[in-house]
Amino acid sequence: MRAGPTNLITDVAGLRVGNAQDDALKSGVTVLVGDAPFTAGVHVMGGAPGTRETDLLAPDKTVQQVDALVLAGGSAFGLDAASGVMDALRAQGRGFAVGDQRVPIVPAAILFDLLNGGAKDWAANPYAALGRTALNTADSTFQLGTTGAGTGATTATLKGGLGSASAILPSGHTVGALVAVNALGTATVGDGAHFWAGPWEIGTEFGGRGPAISYPRHMPPTKLGGATTIAIVATDAILTQAQCTRLATATHDGMARALVPSHTPMDGDLVFAASTGAKPLANEPLDTLALGHAAATCLARAIARGVYHATPAENDPLPTWAMLHDT
Image 1 (cartoon, rainbow, N blue to C red):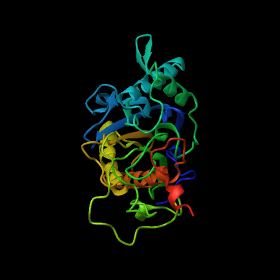
Image 2 (image 1 turned 30 degrees about the vertical axis):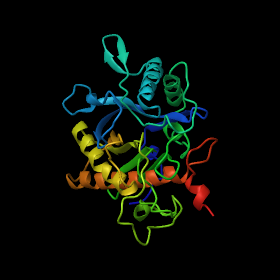
Image 3 (image 1 turned 90 degrees about the vertical axis):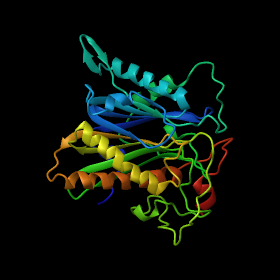
Image 4 (image 1 turned 180 degrees about the vertical axis):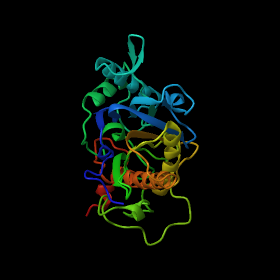
């Protein structure tokens, strides 16, 4: 297994990512959109999720494909980002056909970043406009770290951020992950520079420090209050909605590898899974097992990359990884 050409979720052909943020607000929105609708599933492991339209992703529901997926800051206010994305998609003529009307299907998940030092005294909810901008700027390449939904993200000890990674499997399938890292737990081991995700690093994608020599047996520090890490994993394999749901479930292993603790009562940890349906599975169930492992590994790497690429900004409550360890 190797990283894709850009080591981004957009190595899955036909997908694009758009980001928009307000630096004074210290918050933003990230949108994954396809050239065409794609099959999607979801799985929630955190105890405090914030979501929109996720019930539609159950395998027994009528709508089997979505037009876009949204990750946003802003706690429940951020769910309005999906409204802006829907407006922009409708203007493009996209959406589920109901008579002569089009209804874009845009599930969304949010993280809590209301206490990160940004200006949250808005007179009108800003997230719909941020969602519209993110959709309209979607591209096959994008920045990591302090951008989009990761703009104001934090972990227990360091600034968080937006991360992404990809992998190409021996079967020829591509898997990619996209994540906004805003965890109650830590992404690094103790006070050092080593990431919990170190054993799964490819090359020097988050510093090349490798795994820590030893790991503490006690629980690392946590930040009580708002948290939540929200992610998307995507593949070009042909998957049903039920298989996407299982892929999202397996991907949570990567979150547990990279953030300690994870899936807590105060996190709303969630993973969407998306399939563009470009390549058939040749060897089930072995191919689906390999996809799940690759997705979990990609998410662990993406989490570390999001923290690794974070940059400082005024009034940040926490330092970035680079401020402490990039020497």
